[in-house]
Length: 294
Image (cartoon, helix red, strand yellow):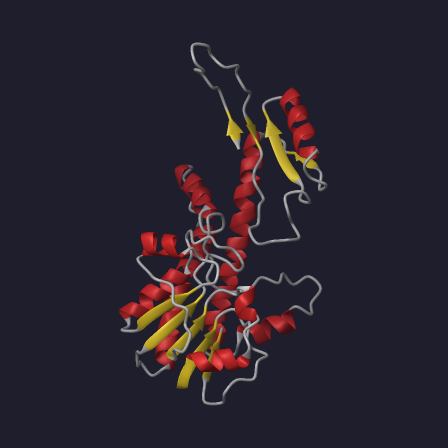
C-alpha cells in the first residue's frame, strides 16, 4: 500500500500524506504464516510516518515490525522475495525434466536430498498466481530499463512458463501419441485456495486440447461462474465417468484425501493417472492403471 498526495475532497483539499509503503506478505491458504504472526516490513518518508506505521502494524501482528532503510528498499524486498522463490522452483522444474530422461522421479530425489541439513525443500510443479508469476517481470523490466540483462530471472520464468506444455507433451508421448478423454483435477493457482488468477493448469488444458484430447476439468474450490466467464470452461463432477488420462494438477486437500477406489473409478483400464504433485505416491491402485509422476 502506497499513499501519496491526495487532492480534492468536496470543495476542500485533503491534507498531504507523506509517501509510505508496507509490502504485503499474505500467503493464501497458509494457516501458519498469517497476517497476525508475520514480521511486517514498513518504510516511510520520515521518522514521524514510520512511528505511526509501527504503532498501527505493531498492534496487528505478533511478528514485529521491521523498518526498511527506504521505500525503495522495502519495494525491492518484496520483489526479490517472490523472484527468489520463482527461481528456486524453476530449478526444480528443470531438474525434473532432466531426471525424467533417465527414468528417475524427482520426488525420490527430493526425499533423499531433504536429509541434508541445509537443503532448500522447494518442489516442482505448475506455479502461477499474482505474486510469483508476476513480480519477477517487474524486476526484469526495471533491469532492462537500466541496461542490465536479467538472465537468471528470465531463464527461471521461461522454464516455469513452459512446464505445463512439457508435462502435456510428455504424457502424450507416454501414451504412445494416442489422444483420448482427459480429466484435469485442480484449476486454481495453488492448493486449497479458490483463486484462478494466472493459474498454469490452463496450460495443460490448452495443450492437451491441441493434441486432440477431449478435456474435462474439475476443482472443488473454483468458482464455476468465474471459470465459465473467463476461460469458457465448465466444471464436471466426474461421477460415473472414466477417462483415458486423469491428471492431478493441484494438490487440494480434497484430492489428497481421495480413496483408492475413487481414483480407480476415474481411470479406464489401461488408462494413465498423472500425479504432478506426488500426492498419491503411497496409494495402492488397480495394477491396470499406468501411473506417471514428475
